[in-house]
Length: 115
Image: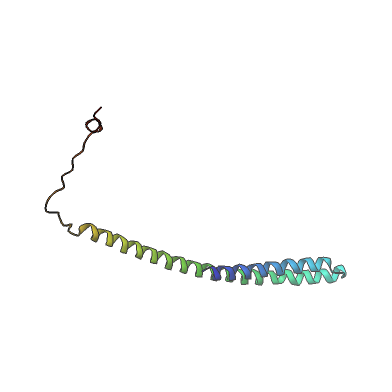
């Protein structure tokens, strides 16, 4: 489960880092204003496609996480059900009664301490 989540985070980080790196590189590059604006326009035109790719990746990771969570939840419910069933069966088992009850006498301290 954690490998799937880490993979999605890595992809999202790589896409966001790529976009930020592109914008930073374009703004700091020694190009003319017209050329920089043209490159920025191309990058801006590519943003919807990049956002769609990122959205698809996030959706895929969310679906995997959801499936994994549902599987883990079902396994937990099954174990709980088995434990409850075992507990009910254990309480319903016949407990053997001893033939003679124990004789328990309690002596007070005052009777033990003869001063």
